[in-house]
Image: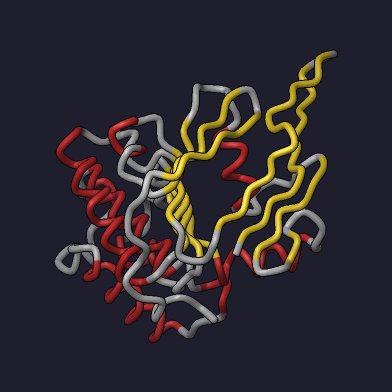
Length: 237
């Protein structure tokens, strides 16, 4: 479970101080799906970075299962991210010189997984997102939708508890967007992930059980209904 208390983030720009987040309080239960939406510059990506441990707040706490990501050492934070949090980015962030399978394997290296097991788990993760026939293809040989599927497989191969997505369909056409969202929602239901996503797309936001609208660093929560995931079997204990 996530518990954010009084999360504030300030940036200094020249002589000015900008408050990207202003005292955010938020609880996210295990297995929740939360979409974060808001205007450009409103703080939505900054909030996702706090939740993912990619940045630290200027004030407040970000607790994941009772561990404050804002106060633990960098080494412990890096390990926690590697074990518990999978992240998908709008720009895919694939390594161009590696194959699809090798890109997915990179998520397992920090966990000390042996090479033979890495290869097997990466291949299985790619099969689970429909790319079983593309293991040896480089990113340049894949479509945008296929590259995003590789990125999803890379996020999931380590069996995280939390899946974060920052505009995961922002670079995709409408048809591919719907395919990727169907895949993500199916994985959320099947594996019991805590799924948190930033999007500017209102048609996607309307599908989520919970919507967090962030504007000028402040948040409004809306309960929109919807089902919880079908299984918790995939989640790390």
